[in-house]
Amino acid sequence: AGRGGHGVVAPDKSEALFAIVQLAPSRLRVSQPVRLPGLDQAATYRLALAGVPPPFVEFETKGLRALAEGALDVPAALLHNVGLQIPILPPETALLMHLQRL
Image (tube, rainbow, N blue to C red; front, side, top):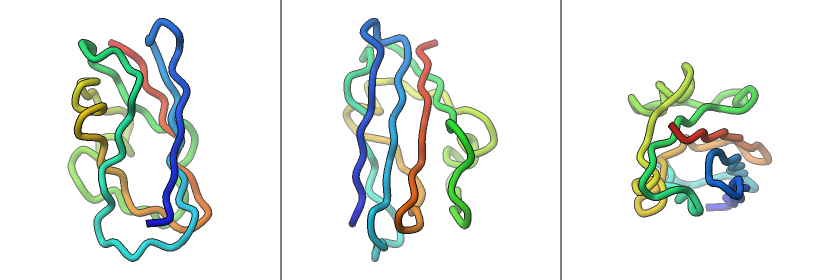
């Protein structure tokens, strides 16, 4: 779907920064969940957008709206095993997320 991602997790797993990058136009109406590995599986993390999201991005679900409006608390096991549903991004844009262990 023309999307890539990468992240950096602190050695003590207390926080992380992940970037999801849309390289090319997506033909999907709903994006596939993005897995965020390397976190403390027993912990819950607070996700917040780092910076301003790209223009014209629709945060359609309840969880995505919570993320867009401030923060979202999610178990690390869910982020690792199932992933995080992110919005479809315009081509050549990125969504940067900061995670902090609660």
